[in-house]
Length: 421
Image (tube, rainbow, N blue to C red; front, side):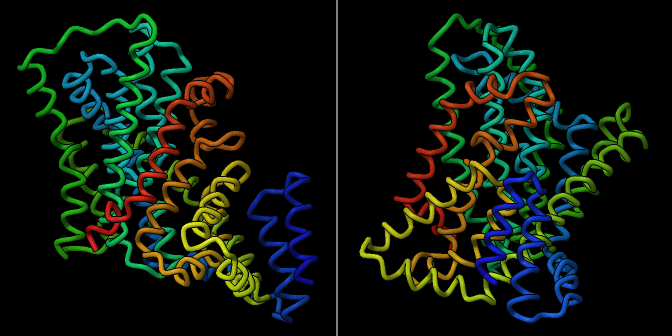
């Protein structure tokens, strides 16, 4: 019956069944027909999977990111970074990278980041002589930085699955996030030397200082959220709620024109929809993962992988290649919930640091978000700007290569992730 359940999973995917339904149905086949679990117990697993205090942080961080975008604080952040470095060679795409890095630290949502930053940066890049595909490509890849730089939705999910302290994962993601940011900025600068690019006039010191003061409410948010977590003032979930309250307070003070009930409810609706999508995938993936666990699949795979004559690094290479391969056909959320129960014991068996592995996993999930044909960030920009998906893919390729290089750097220099342990 296990083979029947796994076969049903792939057949359902091939006929276009939503991923959560394919995982739920195939998992239920194994649990009910093979393990003998009552059907009611399968249903209860859907609710148990999201009955987590930690996962409550997800909708709050999404809501905070939406409020930042819609109520104007994100625009203040973008103007400051543009005034600071926008006049340099490659300054505009570099502005996009840095803005995505900081905005990712405010929202934790890649989709919110690419739309928010893209809507501000793309028009500027087009006026400066950049191709549309170049402008969209840098945003598509840079928008994934929010999954490495805390607070990260994927790190919250990883911590929930692996039963790890999410605050430690947040801390571990800071230095790797900065490394990836530097590599993406370097890529933007190198690419800027090709083609006819117009350099914008350098902003005066007064304009830079004024934009810095205007951006302070946005820049202070990561300090408050992360400082509160590591200072012991509140848990990560409470920090997410504090982020929402902070954005609302700052918007009411500094962005009164955008502070409306209509904007508030639009942001809340978007956060609810996105959270619902994540949680329903989470529920189906939990049933499927539990079915595989009861059937002994993780134990069998662990024994097989650890017996291969490839060494520890060879085993890790196989795991990372598996993540990247799955990223071409699946969204990161089901990848995490399907694979981690299987590969996490393997990683522990070969002696890898769980924190280092978490950072490598998140780096692979960043790659998955911009891997054709189902990269989430690619489709978000394609839909928002109404351009063919191929246009975004072509522009993203150089930065995609930088992401792959970043993964190799993080793999071979583990202290970048473990230095905070």
